[in-house]
Amino acid sequence: MTGAGAANGYLMEVRDLTKHFPLRAGVFSRVRGWVKAVDGVSLGVEPGETVGLVGESGCGKTTLGRTVLRLLEPTAGDVRFGGRSILPLRGAELRALRRDMQIIFQDPYGSLNPRMTVGRIVGEPFAVHHVARGKERRRLVAELLERVGLEPESLDRYPHEFSGGQRQRIGIARAIALRPKFIVCDEPVSSLDVSIQAQILNLLEDLQEEFRLSYLFIAHDLRVVAHISQRVAVMYLGRIMELAPTRELYQSPLHPYTRALLAAIPVLDPVTRRQKLRLPGDVPSPVNPPPGCPFHPRCPEASRACSESEPKLTEVSPGHFVACLEVKA
Image (cartoon, rainbow, N blue to C red; front, top):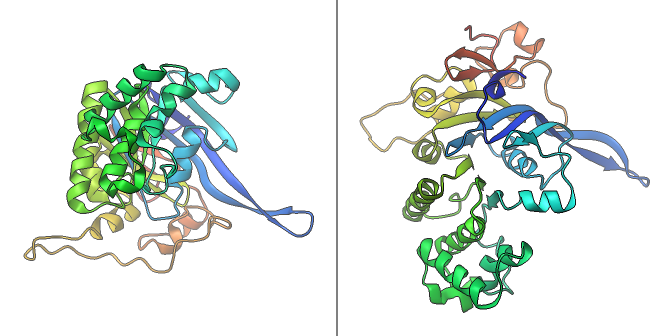
């Protein structure tokens, strides 16, 4: 295995993970192509660690997160949790794994069933896994609601009676109900006001410290990722372009795409000037990605070799990986 997943000690690890979706057309629904949403990703998350996953919309971040949890079945590669592959698991074994791996969805409005009370929503994991019932389940739900900053009496109310931030707290309560070890946070604050974002991020950090949770934190806002992550992976067109400790990535980005993303972060201080990096063209289609480096058609530093050879994610300094032919170790 190359690059980011070569070290030991990961709680969750993906090795050369690939997820392609078929494009079908015609009367007989013949496959006429493939959407290469995730294309050979290797990545690991250590116990108690938050790894941020950033990139433009459509780069494959959410697909990667859902494939890790086997909400989507991978096309190729491997997903390992606690040192063992989870791809062979079926039935009761897979259901048992769900207790340790959970997800917090992006949309706090669409991810909660409007016909269910908060008590039923948060208590559903207890019912599915036969953990508690009746008064005991109600007590546990009330404790969870209080832990995420909601009134315990809220369990008989419906999602439409809550604000967006409160609904996201309900989603978090549901995710931590069974005390999982690993949570995919799929842009959990992107639809919230800035002030509410800070509250939710602080809650996630408090829960991580209390339960030693590991997060794969997916976002497109690099400022949010910098606040919560220990390491950051930059994704483009289904591949990891750069992976490094957060401070090092933000202070010394090596990949041209990473530098372009960081240059686009708004600066509040009017005195501070940041050079803008304008990338030509649009993100290529994942149906027909360019040969060689997927970023080379838009890269200001691309050479002829970039269109001919696919760069591998390579460690250029301790803990700092980059997929770029122009960056030397």
